[in-house]
Image 1 (cartoon, helix red, strand yellow):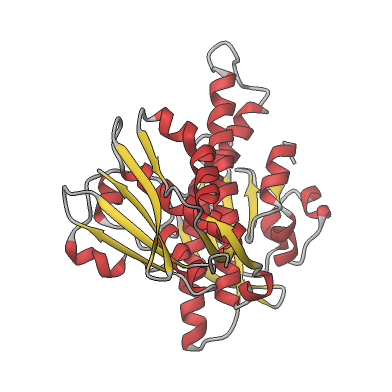
Image 2: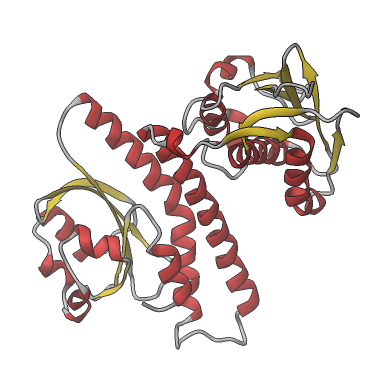
Length: 343
């Protein structure tokens, strides 16, 4: 491997990642990538990586010089795999990035799983490609340090690594939701809502300062507590507040507050962003859905925030609602089960 950073990030991925040089030799690979192909470290010693593969289509794709991304289903080592190849334009040796994910069967459920996996591949591709390219350039003996700002180059890679790490954290919760294992980690207890919200505000304050935004906090004078999982509530608040921050323009305002309401605790988070078209509102809590505003404004994200927020809240009987209109901002209300007041 060319970098400890690459190793630490790549080995955590839920997919196989390999880089094959223009001459056909395996240059880099994470452990899942080798295992999915039934290979080990000796694969790096082979002059032609393609000779180790069983599938003609994949071998031919890696052997040819291509400019486009290609996706295919292959069978290697008795495993059914989804494979994606992508040229690394920043490398002079014509290297190709290969991403692999295991799947099996041919039922409708498997087809849905296949689409889900392709979504994951798409979400990790951009930051992963940037990280690989940056690290390859930084470790290249041909790099002219006088012409390239090394600090800026590594900062770009670090930013994408942070983005990928954050996605993997969300992916962990997503997998627990999808596999039904979230309940085993729940620790429901009385939690002071203002403290939980204040912690999230403090953690995200630098992001708001970076866009010169104002984050206004408002809490009731009395102590309001809710019966929730402390860690999951923090994650949900982070997802929703970060969502508001991303869609709010520079020098805009985001407000967050809480109050007791009819046996529940209501948390309101609002922004003065561009709002959401009415026809998209029913889809906002779908997995991987990104609205037209996100696409047109090139807002970073995977379309997991609101979906995850709703699923995590349902685990302890809470709900989330959203109200928005184009040009009128967006307001999100989270309703939590209130803890009993002390007698």
